[in-house]
Image 1 (cartoon, rainbow, N blue to C red):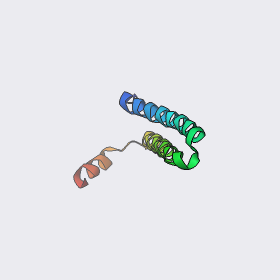
Image 2: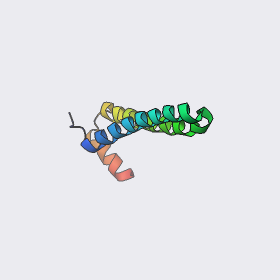
Image 3: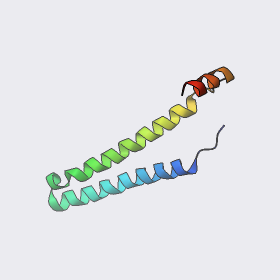
Image 4: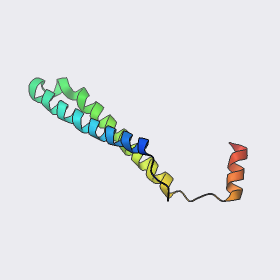
Length: 80
């Protein structure tokens, strides 16, 4: 089994906590200024969270991909 790359794990952690932090900022801005003025903050947070989910699902798909045999590797090297 392959060792996970630390940079991708660190980036995923940063994205998750940044998304949570921006939600907290959005709630504070909503209390102070109203939802119509802080709507964009929630959209940024949702976008970061969706990007985190996409990265996580892509990594899971790559882990579940079956290994290629020699013939498939040769074919991929020639045609790409």
